[in-house]
Image (cartoon, rainbow, N blue to C red; front, side, top):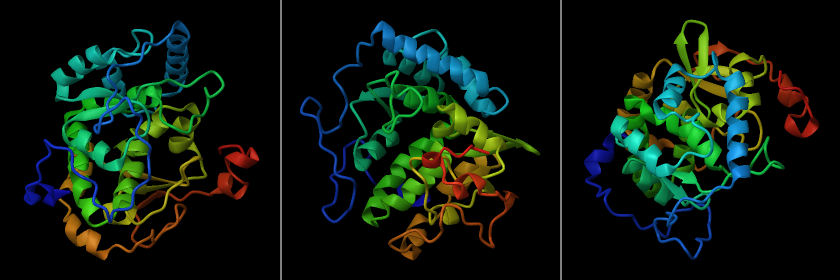
Length: 313
């Protein structure tokens, strides 16, 4: 990421996706432009607001003592417990006063290059819909609860907010080297499923994928099954990940300042030139360079994981 500023990239304009870059094909809805931003935030019903409130209450039963202090402080700063799905205008006003970020509504998952561009300009895209009662416990595509409750409180932390912007800027370089998946692995193991050691033997979650669901909020910091390994950026970007189940491995940072240094000061040109076309390490691997805080039993996955009904122990 460090060399992004040396590329003299104009982040004010949406980049064209190079023809030789592989990315997931997504069909853009006709009512949005090339920036994929919805004309306005959805008008949520009373049942939608009730779902938000119930999801919020469920998370607050498990997050104290398990969620990063910065996340819990962010919830208070943004007053996300005021009831119902937050209004993005007010949310952006409050967030903008703290760190200069805003929240914008998008209809669905958006293309990588568009996502990078919004982050580079301190805009966080949030799904313009909320799950149903039938999908209350698990939803495949991120909704407004995952995006706003899980991600946005962390954007009140100045250092983490800067990290997110630099991540967006780094996307251009990843596209040029055709290593979007490797950069995505870094996002997965930090922004979505990252842990932080706030004090010795006090590991907490700051990743949105953990914080927006009750099972992983407990599993990630307390269970015997997963590995917990100190973050090494080069190693993480060579590591596969699980999309539809609990993680076999979590990576732990010392501080958000350390996360920023490890990534923004890294020579990514050199790293990308050394990467192969696929991941080097399995998601459950422990290798000789790892600083291991907890070597997991992997019992949950050996018993079959979510599909088998295995207990998340």
